[in-house]
Image (cartoon, rainbow, N blue to C red; front, top):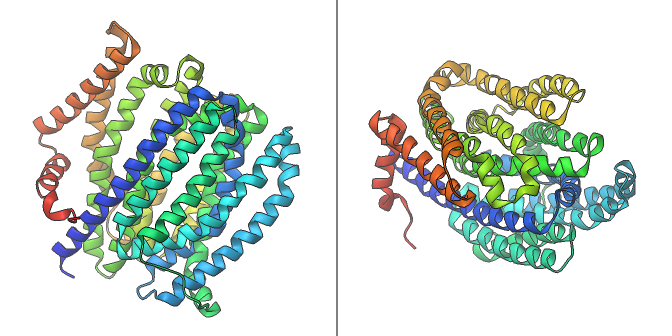
Length: 486
């Protein structure tokens, strides 16, 4: 496949994947704002604790095999169907474990309600197992238009259900209902919009072969997920549900920004990198482009969020959620380099070095454990600040192997994103300063701050003729040739 054809295919995939993530998370964000006004921080914290257990369980069910299906050059119907049935069997085993462990979880957190929530919420493991195979098929064939339509349908249906439940007084069960309906609706919608169906075939040998690659990614993902959510588990136990709810809500804003673009990078660039894994120079060029472009888009949004945090929380969530502002700002810093994390790791996966991927996770978590041990001796703010510092150190750890694999060092990567960092910092200071001098209500302040931030960042990028800005200008001009016609 010629380089221009690869570029066009990537751009089409990125268009639909960014549209899917952006549209879905945008709607989920609106739903979350409405729920935050109807529910308390403590109620958010209760479901937040249980979601940690569900997220970890979902890693065991979904991760490893899906990436292996994408990375394998000749995945066929037997591979997909075998993983489909094996994942469902895994979901059944893990659901049984969670069902039996539910009372102990409730006792550990001195809240019997949590045990009941675990048993109900854990049913999402079954549609989650199916969705992991469906999305692997989508990524493999880059049929992201179908995934976009299915995701949007699931978000709308689950949002309506959860808001209705919260408004009629179901409390924490509104968020439980949202998760269950979302997973079920997404699975059904994907069966409607995506061409793949499981066949009546199963090969244990295929499972073993896929597992030989996927088990390292599975273990790495499990380590990463457990460690990432360890902060929430500790805050829920050592502090209280309200503090955990404040942390989760503060993290939601920067996470919404970074996971949207990063998920698109991961879903689209892994198959693209894998298809050209023998050409290290081309993969390096693609990785460099992904790092520069994603940082140019993500950094100003996160730095801008730091600047408008006080005004935005007051306007969107109300004064009762002002406790989440410090966590919001800290997590903006923690997520600032997340696109670099994802891009470097996908490049390592694409060249088939899952062994390096696993070693990196072990090293990063060893560093993180040290930070966690230090942080739990102090306040929640100190704990989360240390987490942000650890995440920055992990940028260097993730980038280190690609100096040898691709000839793309961390110093080159930092030079690639330095212009975006500087412009974002200038914009952040200006936006924060406006908050201190602007008169009027919070909504007017927020509108002026956001408008000024966009004008300052885009204006400086245009004035200084940043390479990433010019690249995006050219991409937008050529979008009609890259976007698939309906």
